Length: 267
Image 1: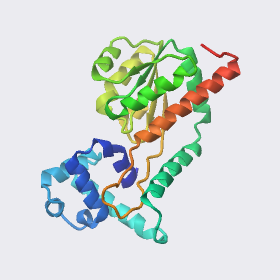
Image 2 (image 1 turned 45 degrees about the vertical axis):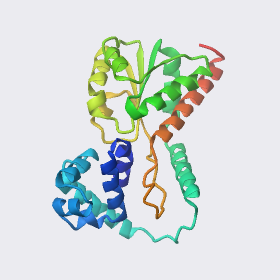
Image 3 (image 1 turned 90 degrees about the vertical axis):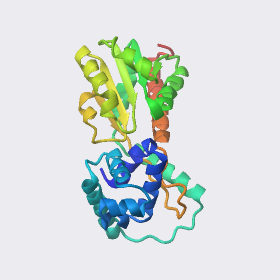
Image 4 (image 1 turned 120 degrees about the horizontal axis):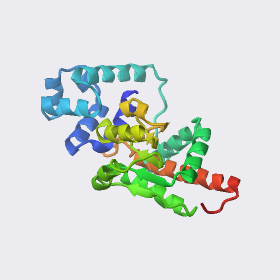
């Protein structure tokens, strides 16, 4: 996973200070590549410990690994063919960025997996759409989308529901998890419990490096939104949850097609 993809995955979890550090680094990556952690902290008007926390927040083991990633990113950028100056409006750049992400999803080989997931949604008596924190709205979007097909599933979107879910999972449960970062801290115990009890698990994420990816029965790794190229320091990254919303609609659409093929308007 390259640096830009990693940042896009963890962006929503960054603090205000960390987002400021991110903006400064994106404007001038040499802050990291040419300086020690102490010097980089001074240039970013923050501390050594804040720089280290920022690197670890992005999934790096420490500053040295983060610095290496920056250096590799700079090398790749230097090898790319220069493009002409972009005179498009910021609005057009944002719209184009979202469009490119959606087009990238269309190029993925997910057709058979989506058909299988639609069959699972039809077959399983207990279906939970799970999203904690920023992903809660995405999980609920699938709940609402399936209403149009008279399919009622439950959204698990807060820590109380999440805790009790672990206590009642069995082989009749289908768990559909929406998580940009696929946090092992959040989902490791739940997925191990699900596996032990024979439940079916689906993960929709942007993180292809998470340790929990090996614990699920089916995974959809989606492309991250690419930040538009703009001289503004206000917008540096688009929220990946918009892609999860869109994918929830795709799942619902495939479920509708499955019902049509079975000749079943309702479950």
